[in-house]
Image (tube, one colour):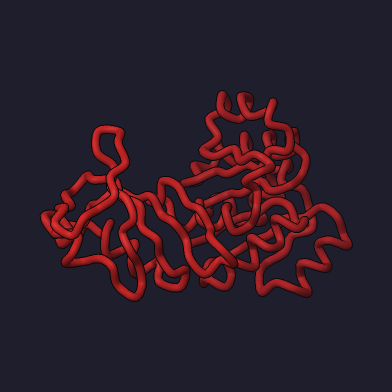
Length: 218
């Protein structure tokens, strides 16, 4: 996946690092010379010293081939302008960091896919939006050793299975089932069906495997 990130501050730098570790193709745009040099020394990625509000810089970053664009600077106006420019390139997913929640409506009206408020603009949260789009909600527990995922069952292999036959395991435990707006604590004889929303407590290093188990459709 090719991901272009605008902004080499703490959020942008950490996000790029996480995504590179996951094997993604990253290009980082940073207009400050010192910050760009710092990023180049830390990241195994293409670093462009320029601004994402300039179409030439965006094209030098390969925006026309990008799957995701993240505007991660602390300047809402620059982030919004960059996102609007990127929309002309039909990028699959556009994500913007917003510093002032009052600006969120402007991003929404502009058709930006995700406008993330300060409380949620951690690099790890942005990484999850990019790499785990099927997760409806996510909470990191403890020191990051486990995560609580709210997902919808999509796998035919899980459809019709008893809770007791698939949970708990050493990797996860199903902690809740949602039916008609109510939260139900699962019993061993409760049955899961396609379309059922559930909460699962998962060890962080098993998330990808568990997510595939419950949501993979083929």
